[in-house]
Every structure is written in C-alpha cells, then in structure tokens.
View (tube, rainbow, N blue to C red):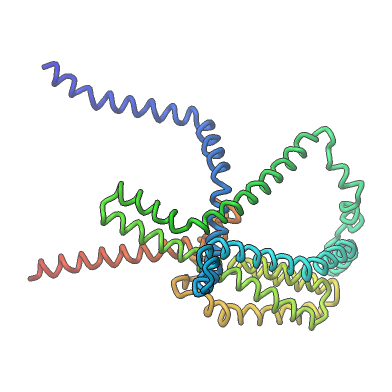
Length: 375
C-alpha cells in the first residue's frame, strides 16, 4: 500500500524538482550568461587558431607534398615544421607587400577624403536645396570641428576609455594567441583528428559515428570552400574596380576600390551599397555625368562578377535563391554579427542539403509503404 502511495507521489515529486530547477535557472540567469561569456572568451583564441589553420591548410598541404619528394634526409624528416614555417613566411610576405604597395596610397586617399569632406557636404547641401529642401550646411560643417569632437569626450569617464583600450588590447592578445594555436594545429593536425575520432568511436555506435563524421566533413568543406571563394572574389573585385576607377580618373580610387572589395564579402547588400556609395561620392567629387558613368561601370562589373566570376569560384552546392540568401544574412547578422553574416550562406547551404536528404528519405519510405499496401 505504501509502495503504491509512493509511486503515486513520485511523478509529482519529479515535476516539483524540475520546477525548482527551472526557477533557479532563471533566477540565476545572469550568472549563467556570465559563465558562458567567460567560457567563450577563454575559447576564442582556439576558435581563431582553428580558423587560421583551416584557411592556411591548402597552402600548407601543397608545400608539404613538394617537400616530401625531396631526397635530403633533414628536409624529409622535418618537413612538417619546415612546411608550417614556410607557410607563415609566405603569409607575412603577402601582408608586407600589401602594406608597402596598398597602405600608403590608401592612407593618402583617406587623408584627402577627410580634407575634402566639408566641401563634399557643401556640394550635397547645394544640390539638395535645388529640390526645395533646406539644410543648415554651417551646422553640418561645425559638427566635424575639433572643438565639437572634444565636447563629446568626457574626461570624467576616463575609466571607460581605458576599459575600451584594454578591451582592444585583450582582443589583440587573443588574436596573437590564435596565431600560435594555429601553428600547433597545423603541426599536429593528424593527431588532433585521430584523437577526436577515437573519442567519438568510444562514446557512439558505428552508425552515429559515421553520420557525425560525415556532417563534420561536409560542414568543414562548405565553410572552407565558401570563405575561400568569398575572399578570392573580394580580391578580384578590389583589383578590377581599382583598375576601372583609375582609368576613369576617379578621386580616392584606392579607398573606394577597397570599400567595394570589402563590401563584396556580404552577398547582394554589400555590392549594392558600395556601388551606390561610390557613384554618389563621385557625383560630388567630380560631376554628375562621371557619377553616372561610374555607376554604369560598376553595375557591369557586378553583373560580370555574378554571372562569370562567382559561378566559376562557388560550387553548385551554394546555388541558393536570393530570397533565402537575404534571409540567412539577416538572421545570421542579427544573432552573431559580422561572423554570422560571413557564415550565414554556407551554414544555410549545409542545412538545406541535410533537409533535402531527410525529405528524400521520408518520401522514399512513404513510397515504399504505399507500394507494399497496394501489392
């Protein structure tokens, strides 16, 4: 009898414990969030390191393949370390070349643009007045004076500014630690992969292991291919747009071409915003006719990029309709910021492939059941 009574109250007891657990979870929600933020902060260098290693792996693998053919015993024996060192030397060399050839003219363009900005504002105000809209140009011009800027700097809040500097320094340290992590990931990549496989095999059955392995491989390939294609496409757009703007003798060609290349990392939105901004700036730094010519040239370039360059770079796996691309970018951007925008398309493409596979499987099973019932 007592056993029956206890069995009757046991579900109520379990529900009560669960309710208390849920209440305590929400009651200490701030502490839980802080814990996860601290955990993410600790893991950030490792995430950065894995991303850098993933991007450098193709070059690293090709160099190691070449060194493997070398008959010198020292090189053959230490080819992994030599490969990683050579890869980072090449990376540093590329960055140095960019700093030497791109940064000085880019800095000059930024300086000239900052100097000309008040005159551009004046041109915009004069143009808008033609439509009967009044703009207080003197007010706009005075916003960017040193005195106005200094008014927004509150010396009493020096702790907040110091915290901002400290946060930037911490981010730089994390990035530097990420580079160190990437070196060890590239050196010990086989051991890391085999260790992960061993753990999965120990805790999962064979079917689940192969399924998870397939999903991880697919996700890595999707993200890797997409990011590489995106970076190559951005570099191509930067070079081509710089050539076009230089031929047209547009002011601030370096700065505008860089903006076009960087904004091109964001599908659809980036190209439209950057092209429109470039055309508008050209209208007020040159003339309306030149602005229209630049707009037409950039539209043609974007069409060539969309119909010729990108299809040859991006795999058919990423052939997603524009509506879903925009949807993925908006969701990814709102939840995860810049990283979410960059990874939105490959993530959505992966989810799409998995969903279509599940859909095909369900339809096949229903078809088989229907055939058995009709037999």
